[in-house]
Length: 197
Image 1 (tube, rainbow, N blue to C red):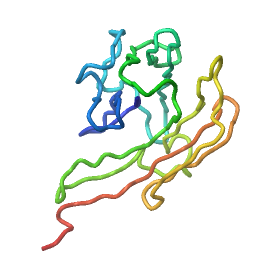
Image 2: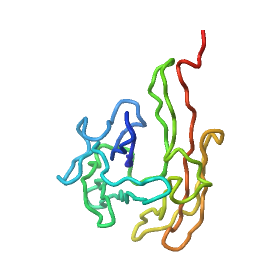
Image 3: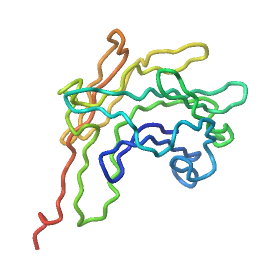
Image 4: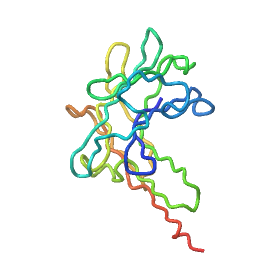
């Protein structure tokens, strides 16, 4: 299960979900493009543009995401925002080998689907390195995992980055930010005309 925001062909972040039942081999899809996720809220548009977006060096906005398993029904529920607006659920039968989660990831990811010879940029987050901090770099905060009865702060984070293009700073608990990290970077920029003959 994946939840977050993506950029498609412009600079308007869009809310997305994704699911796969067999590690991306033959099952799953984005948003509501195939049977799977059952949306129960009419106020959220999967794949829709996010209305309030952060401005570099100015006002910052956040998306609060909760995913949890209903122990009675076996469904995995999604809620968004500080009010925990329930959006819908992934039926438990989609994940035949998922009694509980063994791995939780908070990820900044680039999908470069352009073919060779086309112009492309691969910025992650705001396109700035995490050392620039709040208001300039993207971040995750209050990283927690739901245990059997309560929320548990993340104990450790492993990182995997190509530091030439991106970076991530893991920061320990810090008051209202809890366990958090800044991430992102400029990536690489490739212009077809720079290829030469």
